[in-house]
Image (cartoon, rainbow, N blue to C red; front, side, top):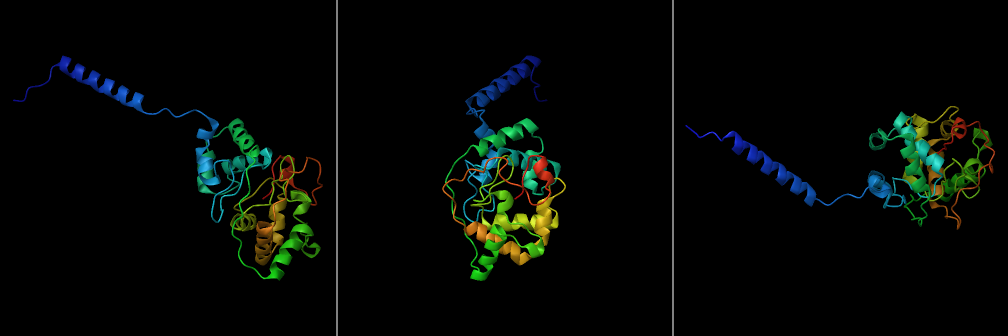
Length: 243
């Protein structure tokens, strides 16, 4: 018959295993408890300083955008108003205070813009994009993007984001999301109203013109109170913005 280990032997073996496990854990490098470490899930897609992803740039720039806008977008993913599974999962357990801390970090970042690829379009299409951005189209009841996003398209404090320097893929996808209802905001949802008045060709034109537009020397948002929204926008009353 096999010899059964004594109770004392079992106790000694258990103690040895516990000591081994404690030593193994002690040998592992400690992870610094810093905000930069805790937002690694954000920076893995949006860049170390929120500069946006390289290449086609589907993941947008966060750096320098108004903090109130960034915080509200995190809340909208948490509430299901914006649909993108990785973002919805990432923010699911975040508190409002922590989301504001993350937003403040990215809003304070000032890093260079990187030019993203833009599809080759006929000059007439780009002219249409410029018209919609700078003058709008009264026949479609579409106001110019500059009316809310600022003369230089760098956004407006406290909550309207800049459009300058955003990649074509992201811009066209977001305008499409406003049309299909996979992105929404507080009623009255002025961005959904505008996007649904645009044709698919108009969305292409706007996204391409914005993505190819030169970034101004000063990329800071305009000061609060410097715009009068041409449409009633419920989101501006809740301190969040559009695209």
